[in-house]
Figure (cartoon, rainbow, N blue to C red):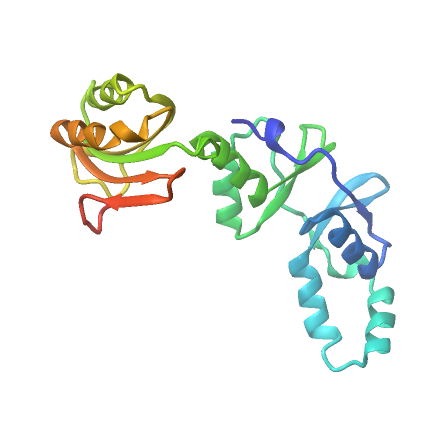
Length: 232
């Protein structure tokens, strides 16, 4: 999943000489917390809601309302923006982007090509949307979590059972984090499972593998089968 397919292509920019008031107004209108800052058409920084809050807290704390409006209109974007911003390449994966945002403790970044041209922005919100799409949550099916031995065929054993009951696989994710040595945690979402057969399906799964929990998103039902502090 590459950034270029998930980034926000419709975005607003501000000039270094625009006021903080203008930047704040654009943020509210476009529902964004990050605006790229341009100078002579080139990216030179970003202004975020964090920058605006920091400027407001330090410079406007003791002012009356009319004084506050005047000062906000006078403060320029160049005075509060973050210079030399972290940027993201369009061919970066969303996982790499999420790691970059976490490492730099930021909520988003401009997307630029090799020539420095601004193509869009990517934020935690676009990553959240991608995660929901990737996981198949929108299908409102049944989510199963397993602790499986880390050997070839272990996932197929449980997916074959789900398919036997008419389940269509939406997503399969796995992780070794917090799993015991020699095991992995596997998360499977399926839809088209007849709810009347779900108890039998769960019984068959538990005979074959260690079922940690089940979430039926359509019914809002959640059952934990293995209580462990190692379960995600």
